[in-house]
Image (cartoon, rainbow, N blue to C red; front, side):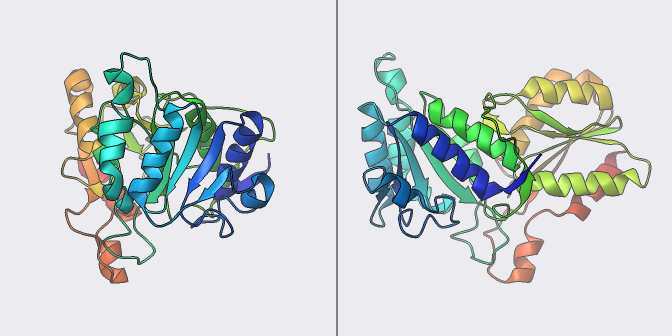
Amino acid sequence: MREIEYREAIREAVIEEMDKDKSVFLIGEDIGVYGGAFRAYKGLLEKYGPERVVNTPISEIGIVGAGVGAALTGQRPIVEIMFIDFTTLAMDQIVNQAAKIRYMTGDSLNVPMVIRTQGGAGRGVAAQHSQSLEAWFYHVPGLKVVMPATSYDVKGLLKTAIRDDNPVVFLEHKMIYLLKGEVPEEEYTIPFGEADIKREGSDITIVAYSNMLFKSLEAAKELEKDGISCEVVDPRTLVPLDIDTIIDSVKKTGRLVVVTEACKRGSVASDISAKVTEKAFDWLDAPVKIVAGLNTPIPYNSTLEQASIPHTKDIVAAVKDII
């Protein structure tokens, strides 16, 4: 099977959906001539024109507000927010409007909108451009939250998100846009709420998503040298969360490590830990371990930045601690 970059898989998904449905359009900063901050939209302005690739001023509140309004009138906007940190400027539109309109109108109105944005550390862009804020949106009823790690998953899940009649917060990691992965030529979609077991194992379950998936797979390979068999589960979507696949894995292995780049306090990893403890306590042979980022703003200094987020060695240490 061919291998393409993560950002190219995004581009293919967008092209396929824009060709299929004329109500799909793009809106955001620097998405026109520039092709998006990470070039996922390269060439789309020339292909579709400025009416469907809408380049905006620097105003997140305006971009998301326009997206909500367009969605309410029958369009399917793909709204790009350049950094997840900047969603703070549009939280009313996201949390109080997009997430609640379908409920508050008794299902007479819906908001079929995708908010594409990226987060995470690793590029030395400091505390206001490096956060992992998925837990904010995970907490809000009415929003779906997707965090794909591979080229295959990002294409299939983005197509599903664009077709969904609800607002979807689609979160990517800035460090994986150039990574290549297998993507079939033929069209496909991936349903929300279906986790994927990226590596089979028998001694311990590691749940990881986004960029932490790759570090967890590296850890599993290293631990195999010591005779420890790790099962690595990628939730792929956080809302809806496929907790059943995670629990079935824990029932098989008896142990669980949850890995997230976000701060541990109030994290998605903490909630997954709580759910497993509630539903599968009798199958656990050891307490659940969480490997997470420090409760600190992301430093600009590269050494300190790397010290603030988890790495392969941290996952290896956590696994050995409870084996």
